[in-house]
Length: 297
Image 1 (cartoon, rainbow, N blue to C red):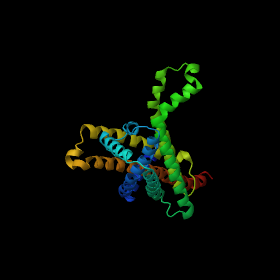
Image 2 (image 1 turned 60 degrees about the vertical axis):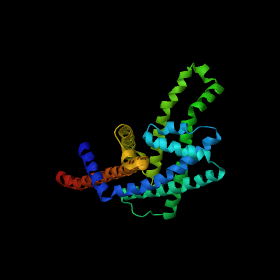
Image 3 (image 1 turned 135 degrees about the vertical axis):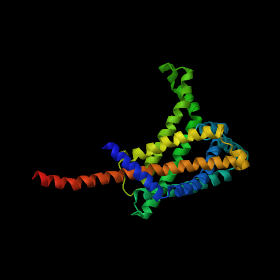
Image 4 (image 1 turned 180 degrees about the horizontal axis):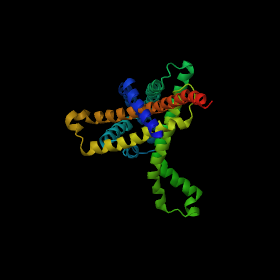
């Protein structure tokens, strides 16, 4: 029964993917994500500059999930910006760090509503306010996460020394090196939290978290596998620089952003299909039950 239910949900997911044209929606979301990425990185880079931290620290965080060519391009861009940094640039990047992510959030939440076939929001003003609040929360989470990933080991070393944890718990100095692995678990957990909040904000009523888990898990696992696979392909087999010349790195970034956008929307479509399959099963049970009662009586 569960296998049939899952097969029906997958079939409806594929059908709705075509019907809702999520490829087109993913292209629009890619546009906003592309323009949101650079202001956010410039803002974080400016904060790190105040701490006299080099650009390589950001690159080390991005390298596991982004192709090396893209990371090199971002590193060169941030290095250039670091040399031209000013307070005007900081506030300018902060303004665009809000505007473009807000557009991306609006695009994605509308795609989630389309997946669930919710139509226009019951309270447009409240819906817009939820989108704005989520965007601000998202920016704070992303900024703190990247700063923590970059500065986490230094912070842990200082905290351990101040609290004398290493002496009390007998932790070897090499134990702090585990942070470089733990930080990726932290990134995954925070991405999971962001998607839970995003799928919740998009709907008029707060859904049970358990109904959101399948689609979020599908999106995150698929994104991780495809990101790693795409990075390996670009570094070992892809010849985008030969085909596209200087634009090769930009093309690689666009493809990765498009795949990311597609999978985010696909997770919402899968959750909606599961909900639709559940309603269909309950409706079938309600139709069968009166017949069974008549036969028994």
